Image (cartoon, rainbow, N blue to C red; front, top):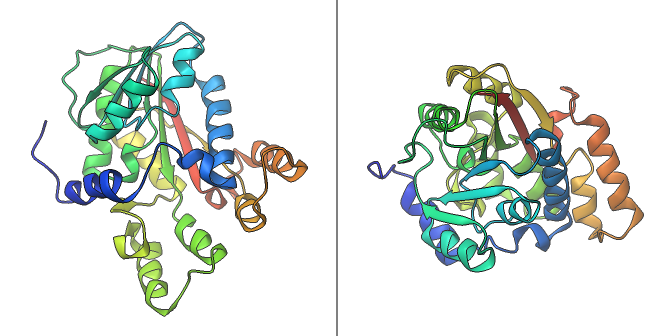
Length: 266
């Protein structure tokens, strides 16, 4: 593995000692909406099973497990050993190893599709994000999709406001984050970078990939779901899914999602 980046100890500590990632997507209405929409998008963007899917930064396997259950052959790589152990325990059909998204000891064209559904969140330097995308492209067979997720530049300010956690201290931190994209861990999240959609496009191109298609994941109604504590069985949740689908490619609305996903062919 390459020499540790300055942010890595904080990220390792956060996901090992502070935050439990395994149930994040079930913990809030926004998490459930994110999971539903991401799985729907992957079903559309990935080749049909069986395909070799490389899930880089796949955490404890929230997407690797369902993809394997659908018939794909999935190899998960994550920086956090606890995530790899959790993925192995929960999804025995998924192979999982510890690794760095920017430099993986795997041969060229090893997968039919590559996912980066987490690493770009935590690479605060543009050069590292481009390197991770370039590595995913190297590992993907020609014509296969490279799918990457990013946290929206607007997400932190929206989320903390909805939670009633915006105060004089973190308001200053969030304004700085909104200007630079770099999150300060004092806001409650770990070291992270939050994208504008056009930045994600630029990074794909810089990595040698074609101009990607960009999709808004949750759409504009996720803060309402969180504020109301909407259950997945309620009509409002279904309406939020439909709303997200309707606006998913609308550049005027993309940044209202908490996450965006981009895809291009290697």
